Image (cartoon, rainbow, N blue to C red):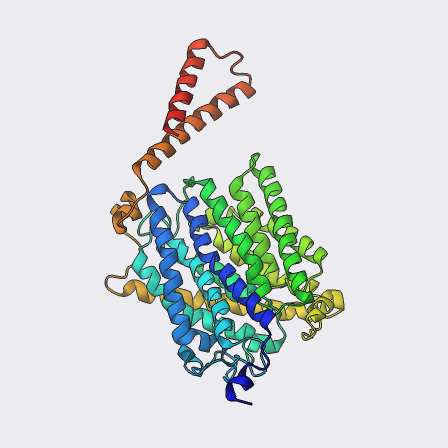
Length: 477
């Protein structure tokens, strides 16, 4: 048998096709995050965040190709903390699998695997919105990928990783992806300070209205769809367990969205599109570490718990004075911690075994009470590593001449698009947005007055004025 035949003899065509498809799906997450974030920002700062999405993807892919993939996945490393450089730049991969006897060539594994750090980094560097500079964010992204993400990925998934060998369960990245990005986002937001308050780390967080709920909706819809590929592709094969992963993902996101919206409605008295989007994300965050271990009922129950807690914690940003506009610290950080912890209770060894290979002791539902301790040890270590090294990276980069993380007060007032970018959102869009806001606000004021009995009949002149505004508004549309 030739060398090539030996390398490819264990490959499974169906698995290769499926993981390539999942690689394409996971790719969509990062631009979708850009759409999600841009929708909750002011219009004058949209292009910078969208541009950052492309550049973050490109820079992290380059770092992952050069050394990241090897440091995060190397099967020949004897360290329990990080991989070696045996697989750097895929220099000796040819057609062989990452692990001997594997069902996929290493090249396909790379194509899927690379979008995990890409998504993780984009979640947190998006914290620059409306007051951070682009270039320093990319320097931070490149360094953070190697210093923070690579060790975490190796701990959780590396053959000799200490968390994997401890017995901690994390199927698709609740720790390295969600907890790490949430903690880093909170730290980044604290380091560069709140919008409108240059020179301060914290302060009263001014409520800002995003420019487009529609853009946010589109972004989260793409994230929702792509996350099926994110979770199910992590199995790196197609079998009976894949069905449970898909099912758990749709149940978790659906139950969480309803629970989050219901909680938000009780607290605010209004239905919110933004709350629905955030609820979906909480559900995806919750199920990421456990999608391959849960019975469907557990996916539903844990997602409801997670969604309610995360929505109740939203005011924490105001209490701490940290302007984490995307709420990533709560949604990804706290949501990831809750999801990781609950995995220790509800993980089922039966569901895990449906791929014909995996053997675990399960969680509390299988009488394995020590599993909760492993889960807590996992997220505590990830939180500490991420917080400490993220802040060190921010501090060092910020001290380099020309790489200050925070933009000037003048740039912030002008808008980061006009200050840094060659393109801006068109002026018609700005005028349309202002007109819509004014018109909607006026109608809401009148409706509230009618409900309160302050207005019984609207006089003809006022009705005519409102009708004129409506006609003028429709002309603008």
